[in-house]
Length: 275
Image (cartoon, rainbow, N blue to C red; front, top):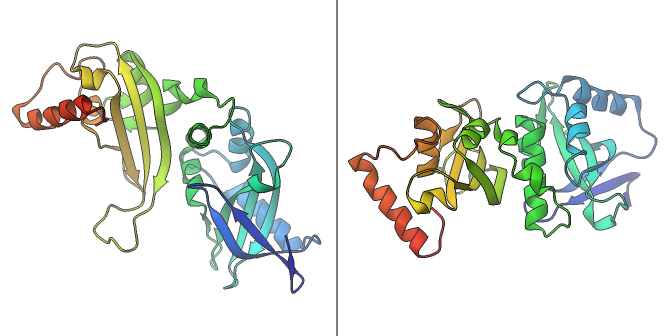
């Protein structure tokens, strides 16, 4: 980090979908009392949707993902807005090119809001964040990614449906999770006002030992999305069946209006594509 007018610029450039924080002026090593208070405020008041604190989440995620906690700090934006950040790396050797950060914005009214889009799954709880990070590790070709955790249906129980929790439904439906897996947060493009609002997304591929069309029971695509303050909504055809019918009987009854969706899936499967 280079000093600029007595302050150091915090460049936290994160590969692929990870956040790139630039233009934030980090405070000097002489941490002021109010900076410490800001960090402690985030630790004591911020909560995930299930009530977990950030320190609880950090402790749990570090046990299952390549997630090595580093340090807390305070940075100031060019507009005077204050940010609290928590830095971490994937490896204990602290390579200079892999320093990541989870950042909270402190509004003028004292409101604390997560500012790191890539880390938004943390708001769903520690399992969602861990799944998101491990999925990124797989995409990046990271060695020894925790595939057992990534493929364990129980870790997807934060997704709820009218039939119950997603992980439980997959287990009772005799489904095994395969690659790819995605747990992320999708932002609405600024230039596309008609697009969906910002939302969390969970995407799974599964093999299920149940009766049904081969293009669903093998490499079947399950996609759920959730907007702020809303329930999880199924997006793919398979997800809609899971949300509507008991486990294992997802394809027992097909309505005439659903034939077109099934035919599209069949053609996609024949062309080697997923739903």
